[in-house]
Length: 87
Image (cartoon, rainbow, N blue to C red):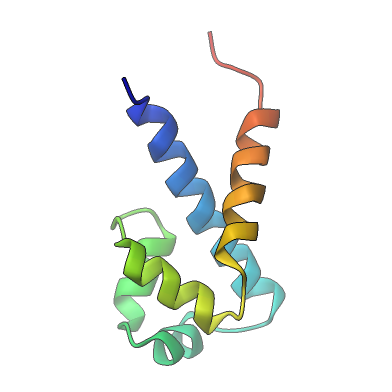
């Protein structure tokens, strides 16, 4: 049985990693939204965890950042593994 809570945590961490990548590159969410063809408000909602993006949208965002999504996913899962488990 899949652990839905874990899947949600991984998704949230991937989005956090993408937001951090955008900030590291000094890009506004407007610039990234324009590059990937989504609205600035949609990107903002995604980054704040208020919308769950499709895989296609996540791919568009990572492409706009010229970031390798597989690397981001790997970093996200490693970061979650390193966090202490809640009891």
